[in-house]
Length: 115
Length: 115
Image (cartoon, rainbow over all chains, first blue to last red; front, top):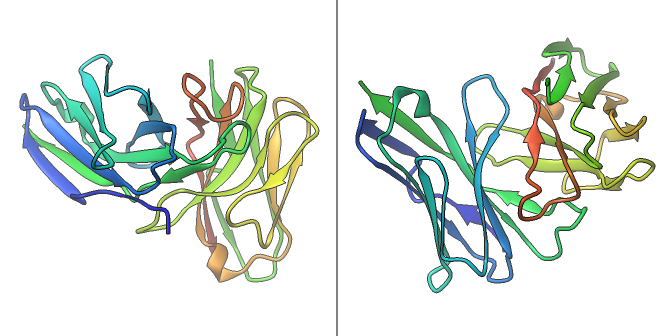
């Protein structure tokens, strides 16, 4: 079946280091991928997205890499800060998302930043 | 700018009781969604509304009904609550469906317990 999964359920990094959160997807027809951040007691917050015809996209302190050959997505956070501590979700848009909201969410990776 | 507002934040129901979860967005978005989030599982789509006047089932619609009251408001109703509906419910909106540069914006959730 279709699935979006994460290689590491938890990740602990030192403040100031770079963080890499990984995600595997199985639907080769997915055309759009998104990363969300969820802090405790809050809703998911959009971080960055990438289309399937792109390999890399950069935002403020974040970079998303897409490797379609191995169906792998990663989120890199530069100079990780305590405020980055949260659960990070990847999601893929399968088929013709359009108005259907066909987003499949992964289960999440918890990032803990040590001061 | 409040974004997506959900009420109530917390609710405890007894089995068989009914209730309506309210959601409003002030971003003039066309599409609105209801998700549930359970421990160890990704967000799952319950219902969505592509535009005012339309609603459609998502992945897990059984036991729920929705109403798109106007462009701003999208409510979720549990007619006869069951313990399996204990979850955190998130409302989300997007400018026009789910696509690149039209990400979902989430509220902070309603934490529902059914005893």
